[in-house]
Image (cartoon, rainbow, N blue to C red; front, side):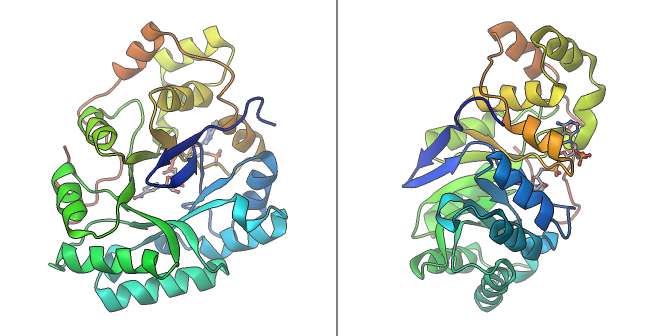
Length: 278
Ligand SMILES: NC(=O)c1ccc[n+]([C@@H]2O[C@H](COP(=O)([O-])OP(=O)(O)OC[C@H]3O[C@@H](n4cnc5c(N)ncnc54)[C@H](OP(=O)(O)O)[C@@H]3O)[C@@H](O)[C@H]2O)c1
């Protein structure tokens, strides 16, 4: 069990547990989600596109944890950003999850099909006003798109979900989010496993008597306003990834991890869909 209480990040009335459980590529993940909830996770990340929503819903029900204690996140895929498609996708997600509402709904990627951003943002805001989601956000938007989205959207954007790990410099986007009251949810926080071969991270982990995953997740949460959502298919590692609130990294350790960023560090960069990154 985690040895310290999970901090919560707050903005625009949204209170998000700082570490979440990622479910991409986990498929029928009911047992893992139930295990994660029993281990203390209260923030679960899924998406219509992942095919994990039914498993997430089953896991929530099997866990016995009351729905009201869980911060549940899903996303509308880029194929469904026209207003009608958007509404249908949200209905399907709620049916998959077997819930009445989610806590956070994201636009998963910006449109590639010349759909006006204002149409998508109005559809996103409408789901909030209908009570289908408590809060709204975007994912994989650059700063220019976030500016446009915030001006087009009649409801506040509470989060940006974007890639962040030691090999990617996200300082500009992090500053923008901090200045505008937007929580930065960090996906691929373990760089999909690339961090485990890193001698700098291994050295810090050994010195701290922690695992590399814990050092990387600590580096993320210690920066403030960042909510990492690591995925694991292994209950021992699921527990380990939550247990990062009982130690700190010193300024030199933080700096050495920041120095690992490199120009080719980005992992999720789909051609034709990714915006011009900041
Ligand atoms: N919005 C978006 O466009 C977007 C894009 C990508 C991801 N996401 C979200 O972010 C979540 C996390 O990103 P991700 O799944 O791509 O990658 P990730 O969390 O960076 O890495 C997952 C990998 O790390 C391993 N791992 C996890 N904890 C470990 C530990 N303590 N020790 C050793 N290995 C460990 C896992 O293996 P084992 O299973 O063997 O433990 C898995 O191979 C996703 O699941 C999804 O929910 C969102």
